Figure (cartoon, rainbow over the protein chains, first blue to last red):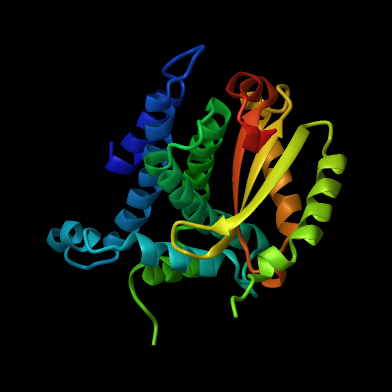
Length: 156
Length: 105
């Protein structure tokens, strides 16, 4: 399996690891793994558009989390006029989830002031699982390919 | 002179809108606690701590319930009017009873 799918599977495992008293050491990495699953899914898809396969891994390493988040926020809050309503909703869901999960990952990894509940972590993991499916439904659409471009490049 | 953010200025209005959603979704939502602050990239944001009923927190209902809650919050507090990115965190009533965190009470 690819790293994105492996990370999602790891997130599913961690969020259910302790049946009755979930540990913070399981819930927090579950949220982090869910975010990185989505991150790797998108950069793999973007790098796939590069013509030379032997350069794709190096290209994938140049993606910047902050730039990807800004592009995701722009898309999630845009109108996408003229597109099919379902496809636009699916794509905006992916973009919105990227913004949301990056923030949750930040809280999960760096903010010890609050405890995580299984409900919160489960919601995050299942959200990413849903967006994997949504992405597969729209990935060949022009607007999805434009999104991949915007994740890495600034338009002039 | 220090400037107050638009989100802070609109806090009373946001509180009213959140309470209306709490009432509308009372079957599934125990309470919603909004907090206006900056997100990790320095943008103004509103974080919602949302306590759900135990029934609504069951895995087979969680996605459906949370989608409805988030759609209502986005409609009531749109980014283009309030200038706040929205983030949501959830716990069940039972989880909050164990964790007892004041920010969620």
